[in-house]
Amino acid sequence: SKQLEIQSLIWQNDLDILHLQECQIDESSFQNCGFVTSNFNVIVNNSPDNSGYGTASLIRSDIDFSDVHKDDQGRVIIFNAAGCTWGNTYLPSGNNRGPAGAPGNNPRNLRENYSAAIIPQLMCRRLEQGAAGGDFNCVISAIDCTKFFQNKVSPSLRKLVSAFNWYDSYRSLHPSKPVL
Image (tube, rainbow, N blue to C red; front, side, top):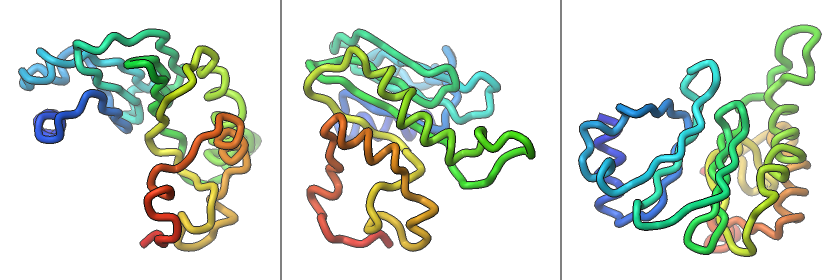
């Protein structure tokens, strides 16, 4: 049923590219969705442990894509298509410290590592124009969270956004609308 919902979303909104997170896609995922299988290519980056937090990007089949780069944990896909670089990201969520003796593996540190090292490395062949989307599971501005900004802010994501001259399209449209 989820695949049929995705197919309906694509069809109703005439989408060319769709990014998915928290998914586990395989060859049979869209077998009952003739529109998707006939009209879209799928880039898959599943989590290595099949936990379901993988990413996937659906690209209309008449759009050429190239320079596909992925991380090895199923969390990031970067590719070039239609004269742009596209990014699909699903960073770890939460703030817990992780297992004793492994403070570097807590979700916050993992998010910081993705923003400071992994994503910039994957974007080595980026084009001048592009769009990055997904779920970063952190914020760079206090207006984007309801409480506990200090726990949710990512200094590394702030630097990444600044270094690549990214801007938040939602904030461009709604500069002062608070998060509900």
